[in-house]
Image (cartoon, rainbow over all chains, first blue to last red; front, side, top):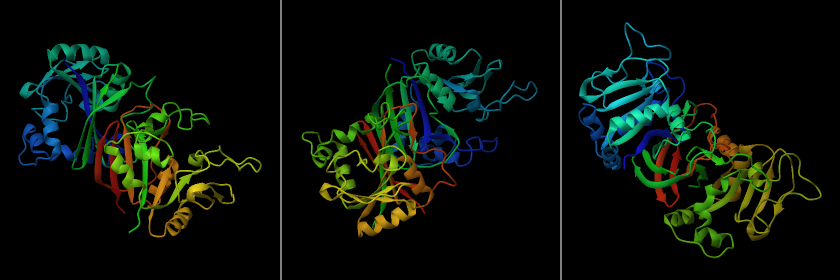
Length: 215
Length: 215
């Protein structure tokens, strides 16, 4: 049964990005530290066309998570390029260069319509203007029985939680206090769903906590 | 070397108490669920004069944490009784009955002076009106080489972090979304300290994450 799952790194004080994000520091001040655990993995480096890296307790989990994914969904801020309409002359094409690491259709939530953007390696960005539920319908269809991954950011994940669209929440809790920035869980609307802890993997510099989201 | 440590249960969305705390529900709506993992332990039940309970991966950790503690520090809200001066006729004596489970001196941060309150089993509450640093000095002295435990709540722990008084942060992360309430980490003042993850124990219904606080 195909799952809708979300994996994201969060600081111990609940932030998925530090304060003062910018083009140079899209994850805000200190936010890069949230992803140190994954950037050093050989498995991650290979999938991003880089050499070297190491194998840790996170490696098998990284492999499991990246297998069987048929589509991604992300918010406009995670795709990047600032707010407002897309530039016609020099449109923002994401943070990831010519061959993004998704290798599936990616549905980007935005208020501003745009033609699909096909890049190398099987990644095509589709820009969805009619909300998260519509994006999920399209993503499930595109995934053809494989899982759909909600990449972030915080607002998109909160919308998915509130709409009852998530099956699994995979948090990578990093022993780091950012002190400010973007909270993964702001004040949640309505009654938050119940969770069932399904898997915990302690690893160097991170604790992976997976929970089933109960409906 | 005696340590100043803090152990507290936190929901996955960062709360140490749910919304709308009251005398009947001091931990707010849903907040009791934060402590289910410990209340069901045989070791906890024995230490609180109750029978039954079970042994889980949390049990050894609970024993380690409760050993070698020479004094406790807590905020006024954790001691309870509402804000303002102490009633002279019918003063609040804490949530814990005639024999509180601390068995050490306990230093309670308050704006309102009060004579020490000696209860059964070695617990004496001392009311400290000159701030968290003064309370720590007294607690260290009273602990006589044993550790000092900061019991909470959130505000007291934040004050200790900001003042550089904590050596170890022990978070019991419960797979629960409370959606609102008291955050363990609000907006932290100044630059938060760096942490080093020292121990992670996955257990039923909780993940214990211990970090050394770097100075």
